[in-house]
Image 1 (cartoon, one colour):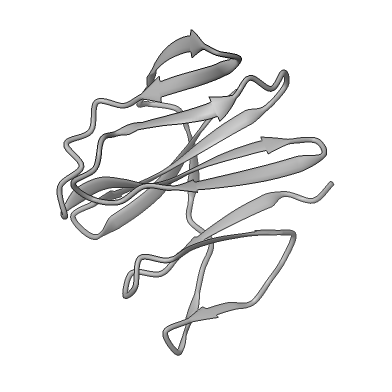
Image 2 (cartoon, rainbow, N blue to C red):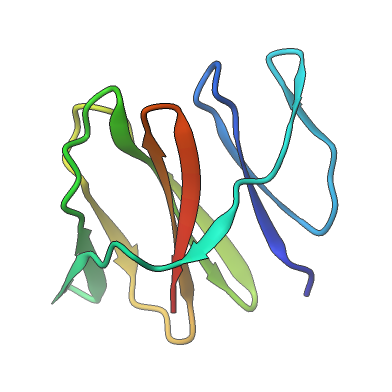
Length: 116
């Protein structure tokens, strides 16, 4: 399987994903993949009802928020959108061997962290 790329539009705050090379346009402009870094922000993980509750220490203001959480497994990908001023938590299915990507936006800077 090709490498997962995550795209973020700074105008409309849209998030998209693609495998391999892709030319993605949004709001009339070409957008580049978000840089993926190793995890620095580790969420609090709670098991409940066959799912994981991921809780992040993020203020979720309009200048500092989590745009999306992407869960990737060898056979599927799930994208969960988050928005400013909502709770910084997400529920994902318990999937063995999954990678969890978190797309952060802070004062115009966008980056993604991966957790295995």
